Amino acid sequence: MASFVQQIGIEHPLIQAPMAGASTPELAAAVSIAGGLGSLGVGYAEPQAILDQAARVRALTDRPFALNLFVLPDDVEPDMAAVERARQRLDALMEREGLDVRTTLPVRWAPRFSDQFAALCEARPAVASFAFDLPTQAQMQELKRREIYVIGTATTAAEARAWAERGADAVCVQGAEAGGHRGGFLHAGETPLIGLFALIPLAVHAVADCGRDVPVIAAGGIMDGAGMLAAEALGAAASQLGTAFLACPESAAAEAWKRDLATAEDHRVATIRSFSGRDARGLRNRYVEAMEGMAGELPAYPVLNALTAPLRRAAAAAGRADLVSEWCGQAAARVRPQPATELMARLMHEYRLARRALAPH
Image (tube, rainbow, N blue to C red; front, side):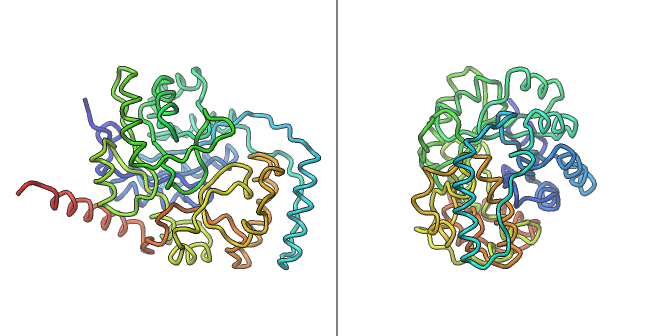
């Protein structure tokens, strides 16, 4: 059986996490050129933007890359009374903070997943990855027909098994340490926060029960080559790194956000719901503390995400990272700001050194 890297045609067992809102075609292309799998998070993008971004990656490299979508219902019908309460709270906060922007009601709360999926199929990346739920059987068959390799996101062994049973080619397990939105979907009302090094072997065992070889990819708090090797020792076929690439110049993260990563205290990385209406890992900053205790009253994703979007953009433009969703993993302070190509070379050098150090003499 071909290894994971052989199956998708890359050189190194390293995936750059999709990071919707922070990943760019330039970042994805740089990682792919360096032998990893570059990824674009297009969960917020309209169909034409998905096609345009995929075309931009292809203009930069002919190497494999991934597109990532959030699996959501096409239609959202929120409680408008809850929407109005959230708008009042958000507008009051922005007024206190001196930002000249207010919430508005969007034409749509989010792009329609079915339209995004059609665009992804048209773009035909080497790899498609998904979070928040499972595509339908028909959608999986369409991906197979186009020979697109499918990676599903799981936060528990049960979710890993569900992806394997749905026909995913690989499963990315998201440990508690992982930054950004939690990709889970089976455990309503819960936020599973299983440490990565406990989750890897649990997921490996779970997918093995499906009777076929489904590689497990490790995500969460991995910042160097030694961490990649440690995940591999527990059964991971590759590692997915996101926060490690956030401070690269190719990343679209706001400059103030990038600066905050380098001084992030580990105990200030938390699970946050008040930015998007869905649990995500990031820095506890001024916005998070101002919205404390409101999470249960706020609309769910994607409604709250749409309401806070103009506020986050205005805060980023004003250099106010303390009012931006500063998503990051548990070891954020270990970021190393440098071009993605240089970081890839550094990571793989560390990986080889760690392997050599553990080799029997």
